[in-house]
Image (cartoon, rainbow, N blue to C red):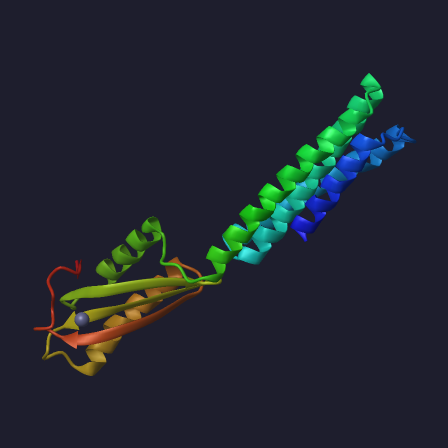
Length: 212
Ligand SMILES: [Zn+2]
């Protein structure tokens, strides 16, 4: 869509350069276009912020698409003002070409961002540090945790790791530790899915997350 739009603008710009047309009703058009642009800026900002907060690639893409439209309208407004003020009709076409390049560029950015959002990614370092901290603080009576893996898929964060406990510990007690860690992770982060593999000591690697 974005690519097709920018190609259409390019085409208009090119034919505008070859056969300049005088602009009619310039000021009315400008007023309407400016009002629409302000509304779009606010809306695009909301979409992008909400999309990032909810880890939704498609919402962020919608916001960026709208922002590209905004830049297009600002370009058009500037072009019309310049043409009216200077009387140089070719200016409009030149600005349209620049806008087309910008739209194409932001279209590429949206493609890249949604591709990485659709593919699973590990949690970023700050989030990983938080997860390790929560496990460490809540795993009292366990020996250590290791093999921590995280994965973002859409809004959800998948967390799995091994929890080493004494080989004498009852299943009930080990399960209680797991529940405590899961509850703490869920309380601290939204949409987490936790899987814990319990192991008897002796399997301890002594280089995992230290339990406080
Ligand atoms: Zn293990």
